[in-house]
Structures are given as C-alpha cells and as structure tokens.
Length: 326
Image 1 (spheres, rainbow, N blue to C red):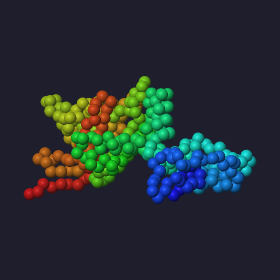
Image 2 (cartoon, rainbow, N blue to C red; image 1 turned 90 degrees about the horizontal axis):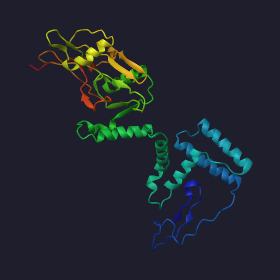
Image 3 (cartoon, rainbow, N blue to C red; image 1 turned 120 degrees about the horizontal axis):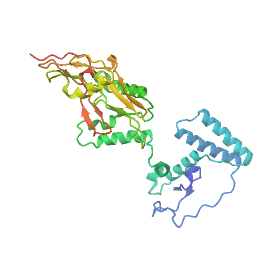
Image 4 (tube, one colour; image 1 turned 180 degrees about the vertical axis):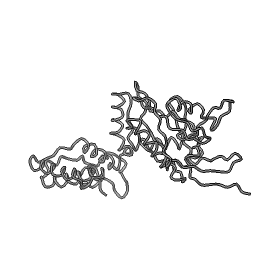
C-alpha cells in the first residue's frame, strides 16, 4: 500500500508501514515510518512539469482553465524557473495548495474542515477591523434558504431548497431599487406559476439610513376615506394611500386602484414609482361583491416591524375569469 504524505502538492507516494496483520493508517506519524528527507533541488525540467500541473489545478478550481490569465501565468512560471531554478507562489495559489494538502491528508481526522481555514481568518480580520463582515454570495444564499427552512410557522417552507436569492446588496439608488423590485415581481409571478424568491438589499449600517419600502406590500389597492366615514377600496390601505397622495400621487377614486411604490434610500427622500401595467397579473374571481383573488404572496420587512406575510393584491394576477358553479 502507498503512503500519500506530501502527494497533495506533487510529492511522490511512498510505501507505508501497514502489513497484512495490522493497519497503521489512523496514525498521523506511525513509528515505523521514516521521516521524509530533503530531496535537494529538483531539476528545472521536473520542477516545470510539477509547476504546470499545480497551476493548472489552481485555475481549474476557479473554472478558468485555458483562460488568458492561466496561459500568462504558465509563461511567468516557466520564465522564473528558467532564470532562477524556482518560482514563487502567489498568495491565492499558496492558500489553494495548503488547503489541497490538508484535504489530501488521508489520515487527518480534521481534514473535513479544510475549506474553512482561510475563510474563518478573513471573517475574524473583518470583524476585528470594522466590527462586521460581508457574506459572500453563496453564503448569503445558504443563509436565506436555512432561515426559510427553519421558519417553523411557515407552511410553504417545504420549498426552501428551491428559493431563488437575488443579491441586491450593491444597490445604490432609488431607480436601481425599483428596477430590482420589478424584476423580483416578474420572476416570482411567472405568469401565474409562482416561484419562491427573495431580494436582499444593503444591510443597515451605523450612521447611515436604510433602503425602505413604505408600502406594507409591493402591490396594494388604494383605500379612500369617504365623507360619511366609509372607505372605498381597501380599508387596510387608507394610511398608505393618504401618504402617497401627500407625495404627489393622483388618486383614481376606484375600488381597485393599484398604489404606486413609495421608496426611500439613505441619501434620497421618499419617491413614488408607479408599477408598469404589464407587470401586473390580475385574477378575477366570483364573490358576492365582485372581488378579485391574489396569486403571489409577498413578504416585506420594514426597519421598525417584524416580518409579516401579505397576500399579493389582485393586480398581480393573470386575467383569468373564474365562474361560480351553478
């Protein structure tokens, strides 16, 4: 059998101390095993072959094999070896090599953690320097899915692994924010075949305001208070309707007027954004008063409130008439 110490970085395998009667594979350094001895300087031809193999492994891990950067790096390594007989690993290459060496250490029981070493150091350094750290996109996706999976009161969490996460943490202004929200609605609605999605905007930071959606739900019907005290439209939306009117929205006065989005960024005042009609997907249904049904529920969270589930108003539903059975 072959002992693989050092094989992860190009070292040759050596015969191990195990026999037909006993296995010493669980020992990191079994006594019968002689310590590796220095091999001296490798010939340039041998070193160049090992270097090319390692550099190629590194670029394959980045999914950039045969890219211009890969080709250029191979040229640089060949030039260094031809000139000085050795070459110096860049820091990302060194990190990759160290992780691979740990990963390939067959008898190391802790090697399952091989990929966490560098990332934990980065997180610790970020927290020490700024008091917080930024999740990478795969980490953000994982965290969002796990949060939904662990939401015990959500009846739809069985779909947690299908959640589509849109990373909007680099959003810089209201126009971009509105565009991202429209993309979210379009993707999630999917012409009535709804898909689970979440869009994550920049996190709260000390000394800076928040990106905020004043509407309690992305698509809501207006509610107009009448002189006799009654409400025309949705009574739950009287306050946000009046707030939109204060910011310049011209009300239609109907029962099913879709409210514009009232958005605010840290550097900008609240601004109205009417939703494009082609984005809305309405489904009409039979009710005694001629009501309409929602297709897509949306979950919003404002800085002052806990998350709450809101069914999407009828304006986001396909125009499919439903008839009451006779």
